[in-house]
Amino acid sequence: MGYTNYILLSKKGMLTFKNFNIADWFSFYRIFATPFLFILIWFDLRLIFTWLLLISYCTDAIDGYLARRLKITSPRGSQLDSFGDQITLIVGLIGLFYFETDFIKANICLILIAFIPYIIQMLIAYFKYGKATAFHTYLAKLSAVLQSVFILWSLFFTPEYVLFYTMIIIGLLETFEEIALIFMYDNWASDVKGMYWALRDKRRLKKETQ
Image 1 (tube, rainbow, N blue to C red):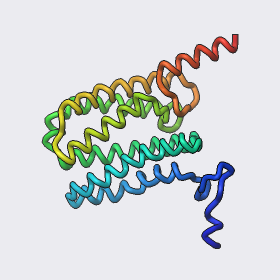
Image 2: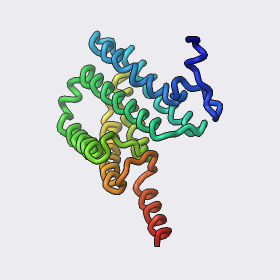
Image 3: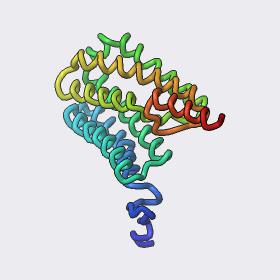
């Protein structure tokens, strides 16, 4: 079977591979890069690990931009993007723990205070929807940026406490917002801007049904 038989051209003119568009493949990159990042941690290659982690974070910005710009957003793409984000965050945190062990040990209580609500949010989502959320709220995007900046800054230089505390506060706010949104939406939803927009849409739908 020829190479051209594997490449399909969608109605929007986007080049896709077995129904996956270009934004999806940037998300796939983050997933496929994870084992290599773990290998770099294992061999104590901090600088190479940090640069490749930076590339993974950049693909997160690129796939979202392409999806919106080319109007190829979809629930599948949102879920794939969220999974790529989560697995990249995990490997970034593991790298931070390995390369900056003293900092992690010194702040383990605060880290757990921020991390435990996140685990609870994930469990609630899987219990209700059978999969992780992909709301992609503004707070979630801000939190992701702060997390990536803090992790990269810590790995390239040394941990910065102002960034650390800011990341913790925004992360907690974002987690509590996600939990509230889970209880608001009976069915899985993607690309919800935030609580304000969710409440506004709910009020509008209520007026329309009256």
